[in-house]
Image (tube, rainbow, N blue to C red; front, side, top):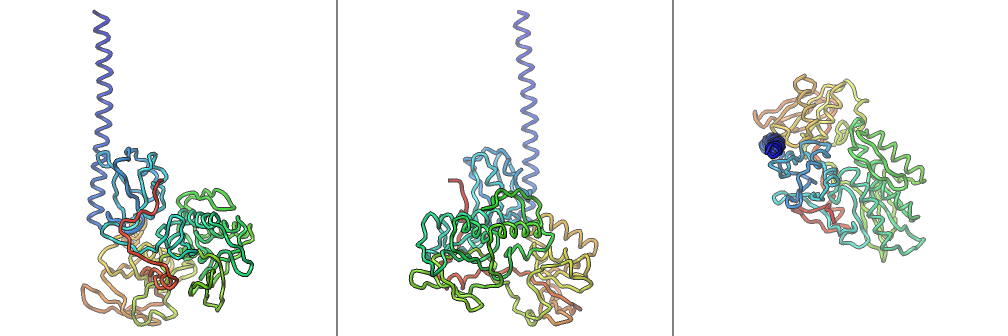
Length: 444
């Protein structure tokens, strides 16, 4: 009898202990869910819940709610868990690096661009990165896949697909012309070298493409990447300069020269090959063409007097070399805010933004610009539009007060985004369609 009582006591103690553990665990989950629900509600109020570009979509039937995707995201507060179900939070902050995609233990995440409400113009590209025009391929940002690591992967995969399809060797023209020397173009160039292709890489600006236009201190790497003919590169919190040095080293080691400051004006069929015309009057011929250019194309203009003056720029290259100037920065996105902050240490900076609040910027940038506003380092003028630019002054109009402000000024930086090079693509015969909720990357 005593043994039975002792046994019952042991089982009861174990049951009680398990119950306490389960209670504490469930209480913790409930508390975390409540915190996430509050973040979601705040994101909806601030207009950050709806994704604006590449973002994760969770298959809740497959998801085991491990939270691995939440922990893997370097941007933080993009994903969360509510009542045991994965959810988006500040979806508009997602930059599409795919860390969540790779970290999910049950492959429940896909990367999607556009939503049911918000469409995105994308060129037609198949699983081998070939467009509707046989022989013309697209890799990287133009096809919807942003960020460096993803672009590097696509540049490599696109050329790999070409190699599998085979080349009809003809010494009278190139096997491949790569347009763009950003992450996708550099990776494609290294892969083309790996397979001893007769290729040429053209860049309208300089090595690095869009990355070259980042402010010097901008962090451009959040995950390791596998660079063809170079190997695994484990770089975190990497600056633009460090990344460009890496690419230059990889290219020089393999004797690859990029033809810089050469813009492709048109691509047309010429018999069984493509004729590529450049701004320098070149007529280049190739069996295949890979477009590894950005989505922005040409900077978007404001359509106001004076925006073509010499004191107006659409990108910031060397902020540390600009000092003791009166600067107006136009825009409310990450690029505009990062430029304003980079210039604020040595200059008087006014940031003009047409809306009444910053809607879709990274959390770190939001914190930094708020701190700069409070300290008076950056003078932010919400609800304003630039009306006219002159050499020594600008006219800014307030939409609230319906009046013009005249400000003394030395330099103007405009960050109004860019326009998809639609005309260039359509001239080459590439079809463009507005996609809603289009899956860019998924587990097979």
